[in-house]
Image (cartoon, rainbow, N blue to C red; front, side, top):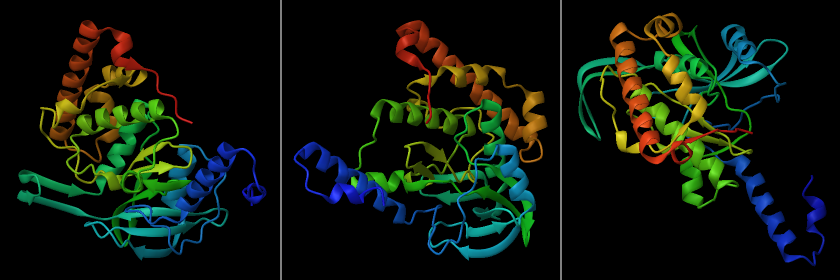
Length: 293
């Protein structure tokens, strides 16, 4: 273990403190999380794969193990997939519910939909925006049709875990920028179910957004415009490039035309908001260049 040499007496108190911090972070690998429940998983660490290769694996690999997750309301599963060369975890969601009205903790939602397809739509949109903050997700049949999503490698905790344990990010500036991007994405897709349990954090402090089955509403207004603060410069440029043809081609099999129209209307409001903020405060106060490890 790389930590054993640190067990020797240290004269430098700071180094000792650093060791205990590293050791605590190492222990976090044992945490169970809402959608990253790794208990009992038998998985070989994967080689570095492209997203296209991950898609191919998720589409074709054999499901060799399945286990219901202990938390969540959509009866999703943790599965182990094996294609003979690679063995890796995946998250399987089959939920597909539509209701004229549905009572949530926020109130009554009309035209309610809770659908596995939105996980795939979120991933496809992430690709269009070049965020790389939504795990690879594909649609395939696993008993019934489902979203099969790549299990986040090196996940150590969720934002819920971090808050409970009062763990501070290694780089607060970078952390805040990632949070700003998450907020923009959630406003874009009208995510009604973002919670601290579905923001997954890796050992390098990269944030991944998971579980989007209650997003992509038809509403044309922003759900919580007050959550918009700053924006990644490249993300804003990619938002400008979105159009109906591109979205229909990439997301058309997962979203209805009305859902795509709602997304574009919200895009317009997000872009207009940041354009006004730049005009009022200056670009340096509003835009940044996100760097993920």
